[in-house]
Amino acid sequence: MSRGRRRISIILSLCLCLALLCLVPAPAGAAGTGVIDRVLCSLNFEPVVMMELQYVNVSTSSPNAAITSAYWTDAYGNTVSGQFGKGNYTLHVNYAANPGWVFGQGIPGYVNNNSGGVTVSVSGDGSTAVLQKTYEATIWTPTSIKDPTSATADYGGWVSFAASSMYAESHEWYLESPDGKTTFLVSQSNTAFPTLTYTGENTERLNLHNLPGEIDGWKVFCRHWSVDHVTWANSRTAAIHVTNIPAPEPTANITPVPLTVPTPEPEATPAPAEAPSVVEEPVVTAIPDVHQHQYKWLNDASSHWRVCESCGEVGEKEAHLYVWHETRAATADREGEETGVCSVCGHTITRSLGKADAASRSALGLGEKLGIDGFSDTQILVAGGAAACLLLLIITSAFKPKRRRRR
Image (cartoon, rainbow, N blue to C red; front, side, top):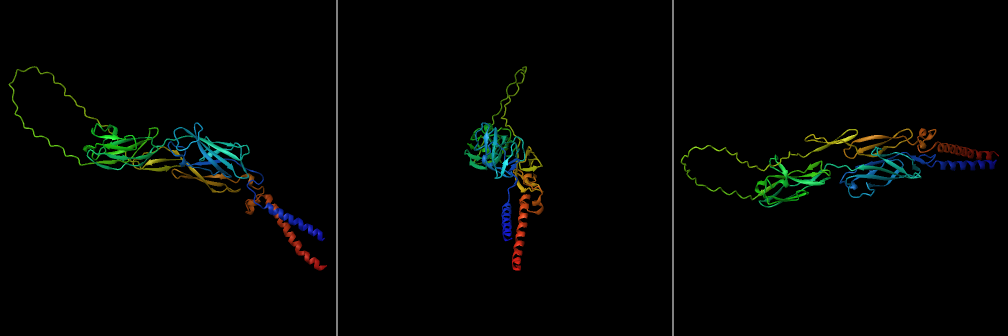
């Protein structure tokens, strides 16, 4: 009888140890290796001509996977560094599956919630995947970031003005009259100011030499042209002040001479009058005054655009550039959720990530019903049986001393 009880105790102890081992949390998909069914990628900026690559960030919200590297190649397959230029560029993003997970063959890929043009290649063992998408670099309207400042110089002296911008390939300097009604290129100024000389009229720094007195009060501004020379942005104007202008010389006095009245001659047939010669005056090409735009961003569910608060000019609509972050984890009974924030205008949107993978759900749903997620039905049943065995062992041990005393 004593040996039988001892054997029962040993068996119950082994069952308890086995139950404790089974209680170690198993990874999702305990019945087997978890399969990743999609690859997600977020870009804050798509390629823009003259944009530095360092400003383009790549991130992922793919569950059970992480990005190991990301890089760009040009149309010839060369790795890109520095700036984007004109042409096509391909994004390459390398992923590694977390332990216990593999990438499914033929899975889709998404960049900023869009699968258009996205391809995914999965390694033979499913441990790694590569996402690729090709873009044509966009040409942005230049943005003025530094305006020229007003300058003062003596008559016949010189002044210098500087301006700078982003995403501009070329520059032109203009002269503007004090009343703002006349504007022309500095390269066309010799007609209005014959003594004026200049350098840097097509760069970001303009130098004016041999200032005439007539240019006092005039203004200059720089026009920054886009790479395709279609769109442009103007800097603010800066005034030219000329000092020590010499006074004009007085007009000499002329003594009037009496007119001699000629003796009348016989009338002759008058010759036809010649048309007076016309002296063409220099024509100054006027360019409409351009005010400084004050833009603000507007948006809707799918795109954003700029509107000038001064003149109401509306820019082209562009798709949102979302950066995604998981805001609610998925469970067996509740869908997960992630939120995207547009990196340009701040528009937000949410989307469902679906419920937890079916491989990780229990057949009977005991974990969910008991409020102990992360354990399979098998684990819970084995743990329950072990607990019952332990309780039986305690009861048996409790009654054992009593029987001995009766003997």
